[in-house]
Image (tube, rainbow, N blue to C red; front, side, top):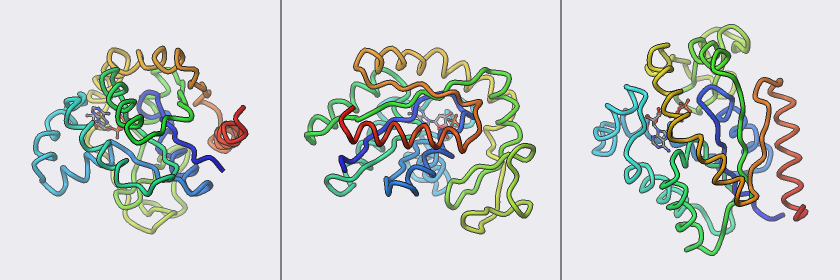
Length: 222
Ligand code: ADP
């Protein structure tokens, strides 16, 4: 099978992380989440973490050079031929251009970009009830998709927490950063024939089927 090399695009709270984990479990892909990587650096109080912390807690994007260095480094450490999903990167046109150059340098390119679409009111509602596992990255929703036992991750048994940037006021800033800086990537990838839009309001199992079909179609060269 041709290794899928995907970007998951879309506003926060649209299920990118959930589907990235499902697809990585199902197809043996590596899911690289820019947000999880930054939160780990911040927890470890590394130089990158200290540089990123203020931006992340305010809901603004960290500088392109910081995130591009981290993500291209992570892609570069994958074994040759490995399939991957980039969740949350790129988020600006300059990041997308750097990613293109980085992949071209390795003799590969993206095989698809999934655009998760959802209205703002539903996004806010989902995010303020979101709980996440800091160990494996799984997400839950206190109202619509709770874990089997309260506060405990179904997938790995670790404790669930609420992200500090999942407060309503910060979510509004994150949404406006998305519309202003990330939404132009929809055109960028449409022009390159890579974009597949999915209705993120659909049940997670249905989206999972849709994504599996996109991956299978890319493998057949469709
Ligand atoms: P979301 O749920 O908003 O998609 P993420 O976990 O992907 O959240 O990202 C959390 C925060 O990390 C963002 O608000 C931003 O500060 C920072 N971040 C993540 N990815 C990028 C990126 N590609 N470029 C700049 N900042 C980023």
